[in-house]
Length: 275
Image (cartoon, rainbow, N blue to C red; front, top):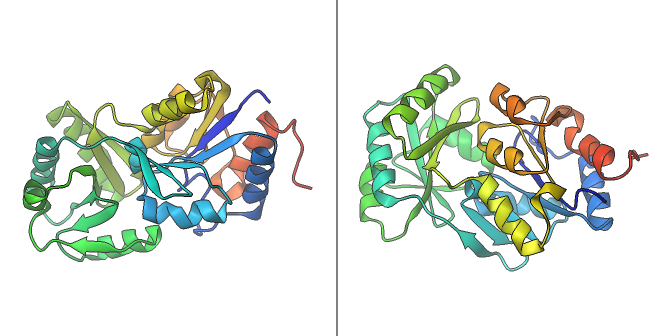
């Protein structure tokens, strides 16, 4: 089998818009693993948020989380790889967002927990989709991070979709050491430059002893670009953002039309189908 490992985004890639995983995708992933391939979910989610989903996929090895800043062993639930947001830069970024007003709602991930200053409709919708709990700090997140002994992993900003592009453009100008990228139509993620899914899949390839050119990476959002460009075959979903499609070697079908399964059958299982 040419492609010995597949690194696959979850939301908008495996996960359908109705927040389910199709049986077709489950079957294709199972057949690929049974054939000797390594299938790794690579997500921006918390480990606690993706854990039930990787179990649903019957995966039991590693999972990439926090946009590449963490890798967990699924069986032991232990973090085996981790990188962290520079604390001072995180504080600066949070103050920057907080000064923009209520149209921009920052969140910060610390210790596999989502933190927000207060409960809002944006936050409630976000955690509902991700199926996670969250903690309210009661103080601005910049202040909370400054006084927290644990290091932040990443900052998320929730906003209306029409605000995202300008926010990303301005953020890149004002913070050259940080990466600003959209992970959803209404979500921008901020992380230290150099921490990304591409680095995480390189780390796992070295652990596996698999040349990175013998891998596939699939995704739909801007935070998937680094791994799509790093893999031997970079795949953008049919529903992917324009920049993601520009970075890919191949455009798959959409997340709602079993694009992941179709890629697995086309490139890894000799074109067999699910029937």
